[in-house]
Image 1 (cartoon, rainbow, N blue to C red):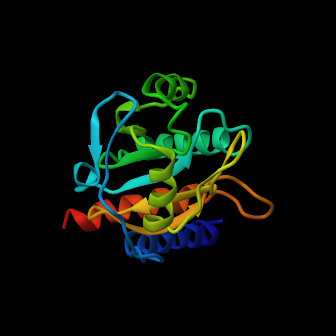
Image 2 (image 1 turned 30 degrees about the vertical axis):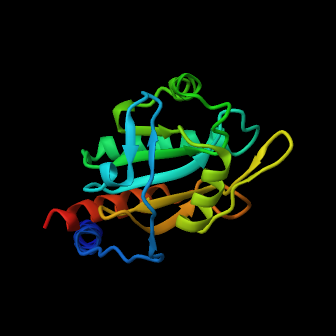
Length: 199
């Protein structure tokens, strides 16, 4: 029993050591174009105003019948884990892909449905037209947003943006087939970016 306990302790120390030496590695290098829009509180938001802290981005719309609700819930779960770990210097940014219908009041009501723990970290963006978000998504995030007859096609992706406004990594925002949402990886990557930026 003592040998097992010692082995367990040694493995725990090794794992903790490995975690503390974790180095974030970017897998994308998408420099985002500037924008001047507003959030669901009707406050102005720009790329420059978001700089200084890393942020998680996603594309959603409130009338979405399938992937947006689980994406938003999964982002809420990520924030819960960040709060549990005491991580504070981050933002969560959601671009609506249906800006005509998703007014500030509609976006506010949408996020209120999810009972997020710290809504002050969330920026649900609108204040632009459909052409802008389709072009911005394609140019800055290298992803497609396409308005259809009664819906909008967009990716189920979470993007990690660093302190300088560069999208450095992306992750699955919902479980699709064998592709699961990497909650722990997202939290660790964000936490590591914060620590590296504070050095």
